[in-house]
Amino acid sequence: MVAAAAVFAMPAMAQQNYATDSATIKKIYDNALTSFESYENLRYLTKNIGARLSGSPQAAAAVEWSRQVMDKMGLDRVYLQPVMVPHWVRGDKEIGRITNSKLIGTANAPICALGSSVGTGENGLSAEVVEVKSFEELEKLGKKNVKGKIVFFNRPFDNTQVQTMAAYGGAVDQRGGGPVAAAKLGAVGVLVRSMTNDFQDVPHTGNTRYEEGVTKIPAAAISTNGAEQLSKLLKNDPNLKFYMRMTCETLPDVLSYNVIGEIKGTEKPDEIIVVGGHLDSWDLAEGAHDDGTGIVQSIEVLRLMKDLNIKPKRTIRAVMFMNEENGLRGGRKYAEEAKEKGEKHIAAIESDAGGFTPRGFGLEASKEQLNKVLTWKPLLAPYGLHEIGEGHGGSDIGPLKGQGTVALIGLHPDSQRYFDYHHTPIDVFENVNRREMQLGAASMASLIYLISEYGLDSGAVKAEK
Image (cartoon, rainbow, N blue to C red; front, top):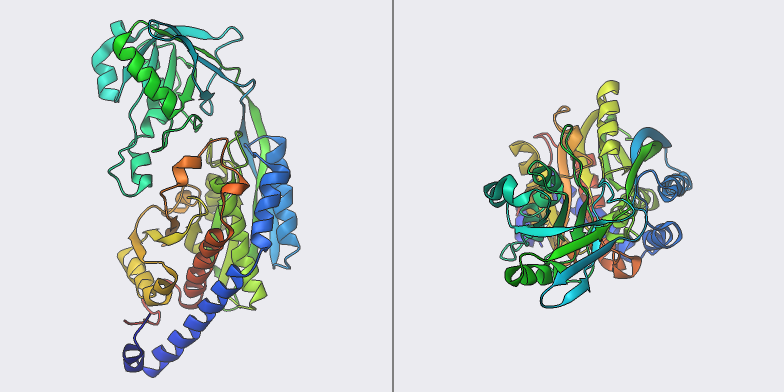
């Protein structure tokens, strides 16, 4: 908390603003922490609609649901923004199997197809396996050691990283670029160690990429426990084989929508502050933490403003982005239309790191903008928001970068449990704590309130320590 002597030493206007802002933020947190509306929204989204992969009937249902939820709030405007999205379908449940092992014979191995992967065909695929930890190691093996085999990318998370997002960043290139790198050397399939720091039997999906002119080969994630077992067996038996069967395929693109609701600013309505998350999720579970919590938190920001009768000076726009998981079409479409219309976005805040206890915000912003946000730290620190500095804003808001002086801001929750659930069948409603989720919504609402009041130029009132 700000010491009484420090507040007393402020200029009279600064003292008045600090007291007013502190009281408003307290009301925001009090309301959020005693409300169940957002949590019930999450329950409906996850339990009644469920998995929401782009192009699916569930994704379409989520669009209509979120439109209706915001329509009932009495906002100044609620509308749909059309966007064409990819339509990949998983097909039958995947089969993974270690075969002809000298030690264990045949054993099932938990796998799931990576998003955008091609299938193996009805009969599946069986081949010897070659294990690598890096692309450099793969290149050194060369075509003679890779051709006709399944490449097994087995680089684990670096668990010395305190921030698990950093560990994820150090491993996820295997998932995105593995199939192309392996195919260029003649591989017939790819297995990728699941993107988690935990040891589990559940595989973690996620998108992969292909390149024009490079053969598309089937790509699957294998659970971390499965990866550990396969790696140990290969050390004693490099000639064992792996069988995988996947019937996934990519269908023609489908029309979908970003869903947008806004409260018009009272003084500078042309200056826009976005808050959002992605409405789509992977198809394995309910998409609770990724990114159901981000969706309902963004809607909650508008509810808090309405319920507390806060009249923002600048326009606040909640955007439910479509297709973050396997294409980012929604984020790109939103930025494209914003540019065409000449809209002035001063800030965009994204929640896409789970509904866990918020620790702070990461900013992709100018030094001046970052310093301005840091002047508000005494107002935010009492609520646990100590980690405010340079960092990743968010994938969906990323395409706005370069449009004027928009600051891209990511809500940073505690990351230690996120990759237990990320892209798995266990990302379900029951694993979200209402209070933690509501703290995140209140944190975003508080920062948005301050940005709306003072902007992000050099003229905002400073709350000094």
